[in-house]
Length: 164
Image: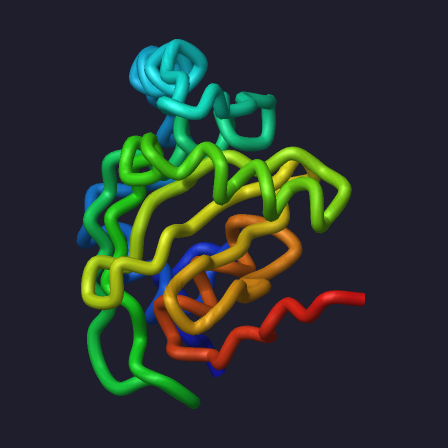
């Protein structure tokens, strides 16, 4: 029996469809835009002197997914799926908050984008792990951007970060 598989092996069908509808495709790589964002974040200093850190995992995520407005279709599996705008400048004025999270996790953290319906800030660390920060707390979204996007688009409930 022959089955027609039109999805990539990287993402499930619903995640792949949402990403492609937003303009993503395998091999998408806008390093020029990623470098513009990196420069803007590096050049920003908060009034209290806080600075952003920029590192390869963040730049790579911005190059592949930056600028996308992702609108998932259908109901979520556990919670409502998240509409996303992957633009790190949503976190431009959050250098202190991201620095605090990074210190708590013993890593550096850089902005990734926002959940547009909740204004949750999405962030990525030096290992590529992805987090969400909002008024209810800090959340672990996945070990990498693929896992995080899958959870956000399909409505998987994230794990709350708790102090050790």
